[in-house]
Every structure is written in structure tokens, then in C-alpha cells.
Length: 269
Image (tube, rainbow, N blue to C red; front, side, top):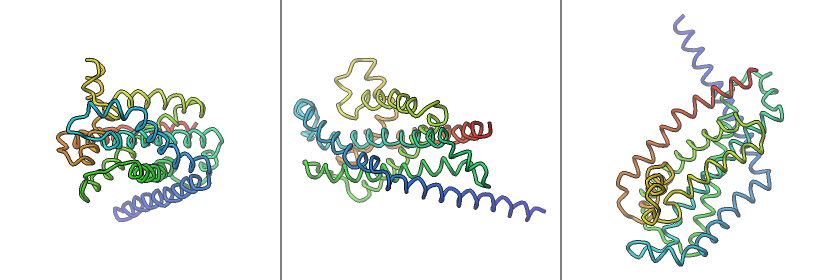
């Protein structure tokens, strides 16, 4: 009896993994075949990078310590901003599937509900990886010169993957709760825009007002930005590294079960 139970549990886990892989393939194929998403993944990060470097570079670079160039300072912030906004595609994709009835078709099949969310979240990581790679290459063209070694780059990749994974699951919650795709776009903008701009992503927090500075220095985006920035510049990472990891893991521990529960509840109605 015990052996049969173990075998049954393994079969369920194996089926969930297989279903998730199929959904990942489905969502990734949509990205590749969707011209709008591909153009956004390529050109949006380049546009933000060039605009911020050109508009703010001259004035902010004078306030940076140690003669750091603004492009080197900016790169961490612009990468995290792009990843944060890019993660909202999970919310849009989940909401679209729910509104168009695709999930109702999946319900008629013997497949895991979690597989649909897994597919969108993992493919979102794939899309953000494209955007980040394009941005880094573009940065080199306009003067980005990182000091990170191989270990540093591996740490940067690890922090970014964990952060993207966490933010995508948060976006999945928004996608399930929102009543329309338009509402998804509005909600994600309202949440992510203040977090990215009220942080150290684009300017040092030293020049901010008392209360804004307190918020900026203690919110998750700043922890992720500063940890990646320290690794890029080859400076001590301090407490930013473990705080960035703690924020991401804490977010995952809340977001994954909550998104799964809400999605299951909504699709069972």
C-alpha cells in the first residue's frame, strides 16, 4: 500500500512537470512568434538605456563617488527596471488566457492547474534574458565597462534570475485577480513604477528627501540594484546581497501558493 502511494505521488509530480514543460514550450513559442513582444524585448531596453544615459548622465555623474561613470552606475538600475516591467507580461498572459477561455479548454484535460502558471512564469524569464542580453551589449557600445569577474557575473545572473522569478509570480497574482487585460496594465504600472523610480536605480539616494530616502533605501528594488551594482563595479556588496536574496525568497514563499490558490479557485468556478 505504501509503495503504491509513493508511486502515485511520483506519478502526479511527473505529470505536473511534463504538463509544465508543455506550457513552457507553448508560452515561449508565443514570444518567438509574436513580433510585438520580440520588438519590445530588443528595442525597449536600448531606448531606456540611451535616453537615461543621455538625459541624466551629465548632471548625475558629478555627484557619483569615486569617479564612477554614469553608464556604469546606471546599468544595474536599468537592468532591474527592465526585468521588473518585463515580468508584467506574465500577468498579461495569465489574464488573456482566462478571458479568452483557453484555461476552460485546459480544464477538460487531465493536466495540472499549476502548469499554466509555470509556463508563463518560466517563459517570462526567457524573455527577460533576451532583453538583459541586448541591454548589456548595447551598454558596451556606449561605454559600459564593468569590473566584475566570472564569479561576479555568475552572482549577478543568480540574483537576476531569482528576482525575475519572484516578480513574475507576483505578476501572476495580478493576472488572476484583474478583471481585464487593461486593468492588468494599469495595476502593474501603478505598483512597479513607484518601486523602480523611488529607488537607487537611476540616482543616489543621498539627495532624496528624508522620508523618500528612508523608503528608497529599504525597499526590495534598491537591494537588488545595489547588489548588482556592487558586483558590476567591483566594490564590496555589503548586506545588499543577502537582503536581495531574502526579499526574493520571501516573495516566492508568499506568491507561489497564493497565485496557485487564486488560480485554482477562479478556474473551478
